[in-house]
Structure formats: structure tokens, C-alpha cells
Image 1 (cartoon, rainbow, N blue to C red):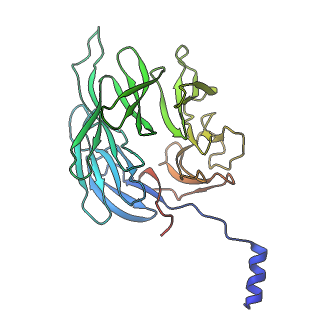
Image 2 (image 1 turned 60 degrees about the vertical axis):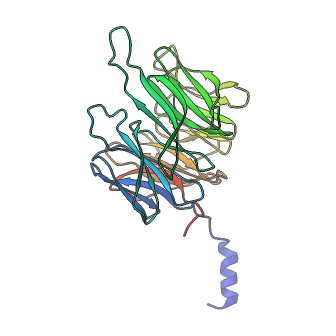
Image 3 (image 1 turned 90 degrees about the horizontal axis):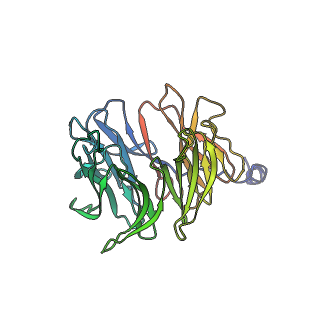
Length: 340
């Protein structure tokens, strides 16, 4: 074709549609004792753990490095049987620390610092008192694996809700109450109370200066809400009331995505989406976004099938569904630097 013809064709077709950066994932075949860190279809690293372990990870910013938590100790009680691994492309994995909370996810700050929740089981529960465990928020040195404890909590649950303005946001549950606090990441590790909330919260995400989460009504166990907390003022508001308990909200780029009815993905600002799930019994959930909020990554879940990753273009509302996987996939986010 002549140059004039190519120019005419380009004017007719317009510029090529942008594509999402490749996804970074942890891939674990069912009941396997090995997981792989992948960038798109390329395997970067492998590590071993207990067969059938829960495997969760996070990326280190602006690198191909990742950290992962997986069960490694064959205990009767798996509550603190997991370990933290550092995964470096083309190098053996490094086991940084043990006694990490089962099925938890590490938190990596924008400066690359790594945080986990570790613990030890307390005395067995009785008719008069629940089991209260000793739990710590620890920063882990990636070079040595040495922990630095920022916060100690004696209770039933301690969860990493996110990072905001040089603090780690924690969700704590003890024998009688539950709350959200911010812990400074520099000494003396001051704890700043944020809000008392019902002890059923989950699906935390931080976007700009707000924390969005899913929580059950404190009185009616059949009613669930999407709540949002302003991390600067402490003001709280309900974004959506009386929604499906499977909604799994995620906040990014100033809006919130959630499967309000337990199946079809909605954008709470009202703009349309072309998500993979069109009707029950499937469900779509968003897990990650690029820093500019243009691209989102999520999982398409159908009963009896492994969850399928998908990407969503927030500008157009269009989604791209990955081929059906043959293994469990944990989404770590989008690759740094785009496609390679």
C-alpha cells in the first residue's frame, strides 16, 4: 500500500485504542505446594509453601519485586502459620519472617516499606471469655527480615486496612468493640483513633483521603452498607444502604465500584459499565487501579469455576476478560512501566 493509502487508512481508523498495562499475579495450581509470580504471561519467580495454602501478595512500587504471604507451618491451628516471602525475578525466593496471619495480605507503602500482621494464639476460649490473641503490626526489613513492631493489640483480630499520609490504617477487634486507627510509621508510633465501627467490616480501600469499606448493620444482621470515612476530618457517611453482602466495594479515581445486587458491577457515580457479569449467579469485583485511575483490574467469579481476571477501562466502561485460568490467581495489580 502506498504512503498516501496508509495515511488515508489511519485517518479513517483513528489512533489505536489504548491497552491496559500487563497484570502482575500470583498463580497457584489447586492443592499445589508452589506458586509463581507472573508479569502478564511471563514467570518472574517461584516459591514453595504448604499444599493448598492461602497465597496473597503485594508489589513493591516501581519494581518487578513482590512480597507474598503463604502458609508454611503444618500446625493444627493455622491462625499464625504463614510466612512472608520476598520474590525477586530470576533469584531464589527469600523467606523473611514467620508467624504471619493466615490468609492475610502484606501492605507495601509508597516508599517500599513492608508491613504485616503477626501473632501468637492466646488461651483457649471459655464460656465466659473468647480467645484473645497477641497481635502486632510489624515493619519487616527486606534485607534482613528483622521485624520492627509499631503496634501491639490483644484481641480477636487485627487487619491492615491501608496506607495514608505516612500512617498505617488498622482495623482492630477485641472482646467487646471494634475500631479504626491510624498508626504513625515513625517513632514513637503514635496511635490516632479514627472511628468506632461494628465488628463486621471488610473490603477496605483508600482513595485520596477517604477510606471505603463494607460493613454489616450493628442492629440488623441481614442489612449491609457501604461506608466511607474521611481520614482528614473523621466524618463518616453511608454511600449505599441495604445492599447485598457480596458487594465488595472498591474506591478509585473519586468513585466507588461495587456489585450492589450481589452480581452486576455498578459504578456509584452512575456512569455505565460493560462488566463481564450480566446476571446472577456470577459476580464481578474490582481489586486494583492504576495510579491515574484509568485502568482497573478485578475478578469475574462464577459458581463452580476458578475466578477469571479482567481489566476495565474507567474512561469507556469497557472490560477485557482474560481466558479461563487453570489455577488460582491472586491479583497484585498492574505492572510498573507498562508493557514490555
